[in-house]
Length: 136
Image (spheres, one colour):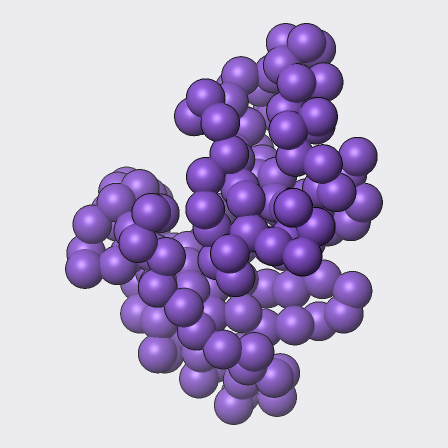
């Protein structure tokens, strides 16, 4: 079951500048950075309980975020909903006709499981489902 808005992801062309803006300029805390090899991203998490802002930047200049930035520039990338049973949510949403970008959840930041719903299934919005590591 979907339990919360986990994070709002912002694609950024320069991760360090974006961290500076959100943390130093806006005075928000940084909860760390992480490279996610499977997604080819470098991420920074800025908690704003009960949710987070996730800054995403292409890891080694590759992957889907690199293509996104090249095509659109920086900006809102996706909404992520937290799930307490990602496999059940995927099956339930597939049965309702939602199309997913991959066939199954894969490893994400903080050892979570993640999967993305294709924007064509959600009025043009890329939606991620995320099950935290301590819940799988």
